[in-house]
Length: 297
Image (cartoon, rainbow, N blue to C red; front, top):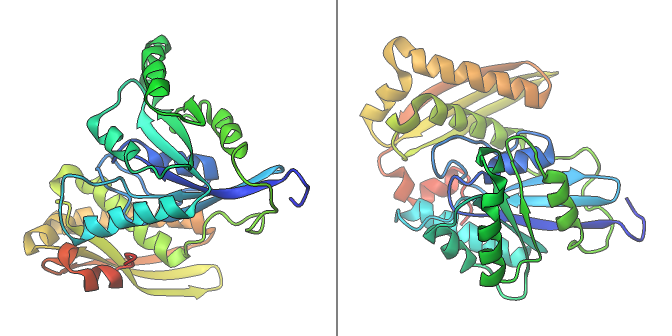
């Protein structure tokens, strides 16, 4: 990790919502540190994931999908997080869906700062029946702007991710590792616990749950290998609260069971998890509340 040819650097992962950035990050790091769901804008925070190998340390920064449609304080903060990340990293990894390029993808291209090394990942190639259909898209992208590399991948299956890592390594600066071997994120267990509850919330409710829901850890205690975690789900309306709880508390119970299972796997110990629901009107447009929920100013 200290050889003359060792490489280490930061890589921002950007793209429009729902292109698979978080799934790709989790696969590259080898741990579930960024939550995923079919609901657009699942990722709301910048999350660092670390992969340490024999010849390189990759420090990935997962960003929210750039939001162009919904106004409000929450989306302003998330978009600000993206533009800040682009200024701070060594390499930018742009993710789009293989087989098509949208107007929103091109808006993301417009955010790229000049002079920065950019790798393009064409994700979800496992969904393509005919891989040859990629050829016209590849030719068009290469003509549209200069990318250091274009790599078709599948974040879900891991197909071509070794090739993606090699393309990224070539662009990282030659320097020793920054993080110790074995570390996979700079986020705390407290943060990861809140995110896992939010993931299960979105997965259980799907499109039933409006965009205005978040989570916060109100108590996190460790007793040996046992963790006692108390999480509040924040919703915008009383009707949302009853939706999250479900008939006889069934939905909330399923959210808690699924979240606890993932926490125990990630943390490597037993978890006592208690969840309840709070109503806070207009939380997504209140910058003070957003700051208290951990959103960066």
